Image 1 (cartoon, rainbow over the protein chains, first blue to last red):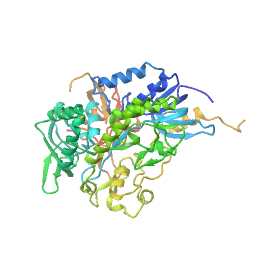
Image 2: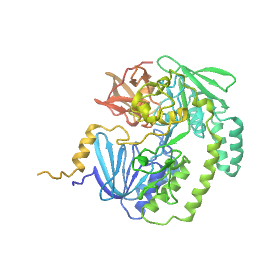
Image 3: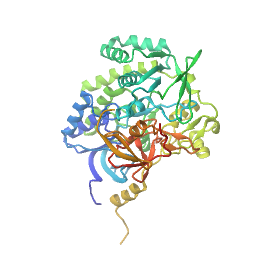
Image 4: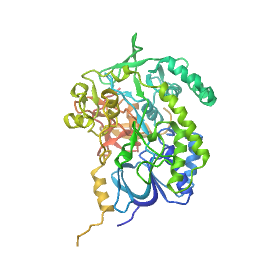
Length: 434
Length: 87
């Protein structure tokens, strides 16, 4: 077998260079073991630490990335992992594509730090251009989107609404409405419980003050969007009254969904959409660890703690009590968050019969039958079989139809044929050939 | 928006865009929100901004199906979208 910069071997391979992956990589490398991190993004930090164009990352991000860069860890950016398998010798192999070239990484242990994506729920008009996610809009804003003077509505659910609203306001957008679907009583109860975390409460107040002139409506959601070539208006409702708001940009998402595809592909047990791990972050598959959002959406602090624990455990070191206690206390807070921002039934029943639910294959709600499984929907209508491989419609149909996820097969995301071919060339040893 | 600008070619037309921006952000800033045409012929543009949804696929330097949100503009880059809608 030839070895090259695209055919790597290491003690621990990590998928994802967000906070969890970075913390894990630091711990592995600092223990003197070899580590390779593969990440799809343009640089380390994941979504939460994505730098704003021309600005520095947050200080905590810079500290962690500097700590990582001080090690011998190899970090490969713009590299999309599409397969993970166990070889006959017990080693894992990750296969990835980087700009059409194959990257293969062999390792005795793997740590999956694959993060989360936004939950999108279909509503009439949600496929119009300029209707986007909340985190999605934030990512685009940070990567150079100019929103000065543009009329923006942000609606959906969860703690992401506030920071995104604040950054749109400070970027000069005409922020017209921020709408949270959770009822006012539940959000207030949650906020009241935050007295234990004055820093968080202060942070929330600071964010709110950044868009004080904008209405922040609780128990309110977008029921449809209108427009010809692109979004022109949004209908918002509280279930009793509705109003139509003219806008240029409509940002709608309903919290986060853990990315568990690679974990499921290698056979890890999942529970309610999260990867099941033990106290060392090891999954049900020996030598496969998981850290951060895939084990349950819990934010950056938890991702760092879990990443450190996974990194230590993967190299056989014991977990300090400090990290274990921190993880336990963060887990309690996250359960409160889940209760506060639970989805109301109205937002999972906005799609009409002619509303497209699978955006890749343009499958409409009326094309589906609630008696089916997600596998049957794939076979009969191609729903979930397009390039996103069900990352968008899968979570939506889980909410709307109650369908469980279908089994996972490689490639877990589209990869160029060039990559498959060059993977064969760099990793295969022709046997039985003269 | 302030910052150094570079030249790219979108559907055969030269455009000056913010250096360092992603292709997705650059096209949106030019009012080119119709990135691809869907199976039934609808215009689609960026949704997730992070490589998940594949709605922002464009052709970059003759390589089709590239996610505009994961690509950074480079001087002289040639981009083809499903259909360009000017402001």
